[in-house]
Image (cartoon, rainbow, N blue to C red):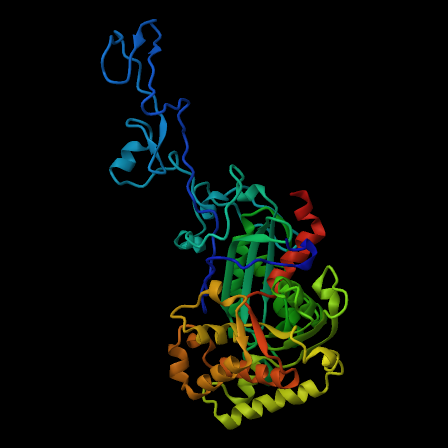
Length: 489
């Protein structure tokens, strides 16, 4: 059992990656039949029952007296080969027999259309106008296409909108991401909705020091989608954060004011220390009991956070409490690619990028805090970023990115070097053609590999564990632990 204070999240099933467009994961898409018959008869044990006139109707093999006025055929439900079947003449049977889609009176619908209740409010956002009952938000189109990706089963007769719903939004330099989840077993939660879009908010920031109009417009479009997803839910707790791009841009505050005015979302700019702690909290369940030391890193678009976790002594209940040193490098995949070039990367330019990051790491005073345990078997790296998940997808040869196969994957030291060399040998067009990279990441992935290589040179480890999780999961875990959501269950 995972400790509820560890900020742990079990591997989610059925999650998919959408590079540049909406990535929605809707749970509980099963349909529960309505209008269940009040009588249940077992085949082969049908007994006659008196009708209203007092005569007896005999059922079974067809022999015996029949009543003058036959009792109306009652709707009943029976099991046939493991599925629910409606008796002929019951509501919904005709539509099913004709191959028509069940109506709202026949079945209950999935989460996307089920939660049309009154909008909830949270300090982080303002509710949108209520949509007419039975109508779905236009941006929810296609959610039911993801219904097969079920991350868990809801308790019977417990609609999602009646549970404690929590939300976490992360607006970074490169991505805008949202997770909406409900607590399940202690230390765990189930994602009921998600969104991810590459917006490149920090595009050109390293050169101008300002967020461009085009980048802000892209981010606002994504945030409007997130606001629409939140407005129709009763949110028990939410935290909406912005990171390096809004931290460092001269017009960052101006942009956040515009976000609040146009979307109702009130984003909080977090400092680098909070960002590092949340990354550790979100990846807690991927640090096993055998670990003695971990270097956790989050390669972002405009900054890279690194936390050194010492587990050789008594382990704390919260993994974040075992951080002995951390740093935030003012460099990420977007800023590094803009400085050295990301489309055409040679061995020389790759080494120049790696050396630049290495120079930044030289100024990290706590870099040697794990030196005594780096040679022990329980020491490893833990990476949470698009860079390491991309490397894992290429390593596995996935035709389509699959989070279930990537999250928690172990890569040996030789594997990381081999994959990096393969990507260096590919042209820009070949990187675009790879399903795990695509056009949105083709000019950024090698910059991320250069940051990873610099980290590996400072903290050489035999193994690297891949995490497809991070700040949002850390936020959700913190919110649920703070509210005692798991204790209430």
